[in-house]
Image 1 (cartoon, helix red, strand yellow):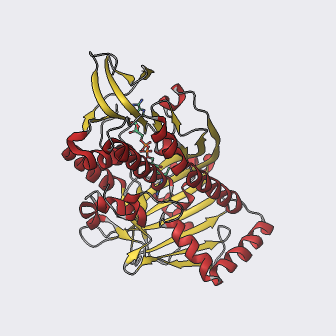
Image 2: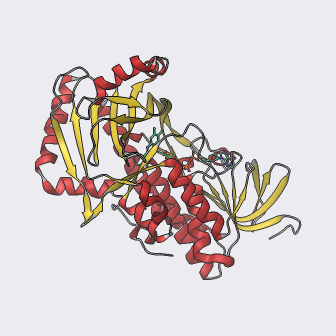
Length: 414
Ligand SMILES: Cc1cc2nc3c(=O)[nH]c(=O)nc-3n(C[C@H](O)[C@H](O)[C@H](O)COP(=O)(O)OP(=O)(O)OC[C@H]3O[C@@H](n4cnc5c(N)ncnc54)[C@H](O)[C@@H]3O)c2cc1C
């Protein structure tokens, strides 16, 4: 590297969300002392206060966590999704017939997804990354310049030279902007309201998605609490103005609104956490790589949570990039070489674009009150319900088993 006075690492990662943490862990645990990895985040490495979300972790990603040795730490808090039902009615209709149902094993005893609280995911991966020797730096990467054989990163008065910079700095990525990589997308005008709900009767591992005219209302099963109380996470999509109105309601009024959507099957409901709103957007980067730069996770793509796949896509990016880096480093070659970067982009671009389009189309098709579209949806989903190969296709998608799969997603170590 050109300037001897910089701190030097092989891989620098900007962004200590789950994507950045998982990439750091995957690379460092494969190469050990053979690689220096620094991870930067101004907000630190704990789950953000207010992130009460739980994520649907697809089977392929669960296999990766197993290969990285962190699944055993998360497992006690991970609720298998045993089946999933979908309904499509207007709000206030007395009956909600099931349009489509999946019972969800990809191999015997292996569910297509588990629900895991974000705090549990984050704590397990952060602890393992630290133990593996990843250096955690509580500062932002402010900018970088290319010095040919390395990028020199500015971070709060100090500089670090890195062979490769992975930008995992989220949907509003400053580093993507600095690289001049365009980000195409739009706001949905919808907000996802998230909370944890206690309910009287057990969910039996069932996930429910009610497609309502304002957007999907998802009930996602969580592990019981320490006293055996039944809990689910809800992701409740509303148009922005309605979401603002709902966020201002008293708890009693909110429960009334909630019951209209949640239904009464699981008995009386209680809010265990405040409701938190997440504005929803779509965005996809024109390129996933630049010179000595790779975008991963939301920095490369932000999608609608309708299918619970945003984080899974980011973790697939981490698996794919880690594999390319590790293979290159084992040959003693430069990990920031364009060969590594273009292979990574090839690995991930199609899968990501396909998922972005699918979630966008699903949201447009379902989030409206058109009687014609409802008839079309009923017909289409009715066909899927009766056609076993179509169901198998959707389960494969939900399990993150579609497309070319990096070795970690097969459950192999690097
Ligand atoms: C309501 C909702 C529900 C969802 N449910 C699911 C689900 O069930 N399953 C699923 O797969 N996905 C889900 N998603 C999507 C998922 O939450 C995101 O895709 C995921 O959190 C993105 O992770 P990330 O690490 O890429 O980015 P982030 O979590 O946004 O992390 C980016 C990090 O970068 C840091 N940072 C910013 N700037 C800099 C800088 N200059 N230098 C260093 N660090 C910086 C930030 O502090 C932050 O910690 C959901 C999303 C929403 C909104």
